[in-house]
Length: 298
Image (cartoon, rainbow, N blue to C red; front, side):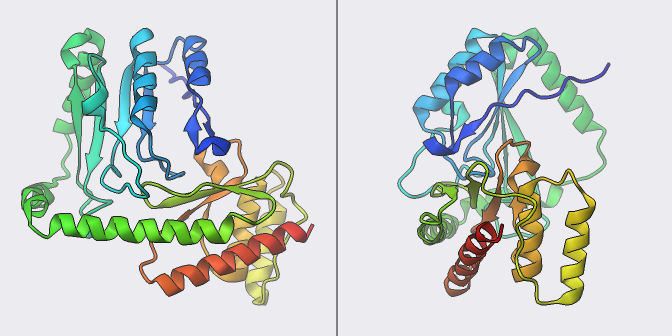
């Protein structure tokens, strides 16, 4: 049987990237094939943190339409700038749900991509219970083992230095989110919100501000010719992807086009992962100047 495409709901960059719950309810109502609502909290790619009241409204929609909730909570321990949220387990009530968690975003252990699911209220809906059992059955036949991180996780989480590690990371991301926001917020032609969770920032170009004529000067001839050929060959290339290519060729800064996240908005995602503050600030100075030059070029 052919799977139906997902029904996405928009996040509003003019309102802290919060979803419009009225629109979300409408999309659920008029798409009866929808079985669940997905929440990423804190959000990737925007860095938005869901307030408890918004989570409650989304859970109410799930209850009204007999849906379950899937919550990606991989960044739950990376929230700052005074923001707070609730985990799905604290607000789910009687609605079936799944929370996806893991260590790969907060534990400095390259390669230890160990994750797990928490299931809530599986006994309240037979179809949901069958779905969960099918996931368990599929996992049982896998041959890849995560025994080492599973054995280590309790010792890592229980170590007296672990909370200090999380606090240090939150403080750094908070500081860097403020630096990035200050450097980008006054650039004409873009919209930017300060990141409050995870380690991403999303920037949106205002409608009509980027096109297929704009460029950045690329000093290296071979790189320039490659970028020009790539952008010229694909007539359907999204304008934000074109900007990403030119930024990479001109400055070496690598970002991700927003349209690659199934978004209709033109923009890009950048990370706050650089650990050296001077280098981070310089990178965003270069990024800011490049945006201004690109928008002015055509």
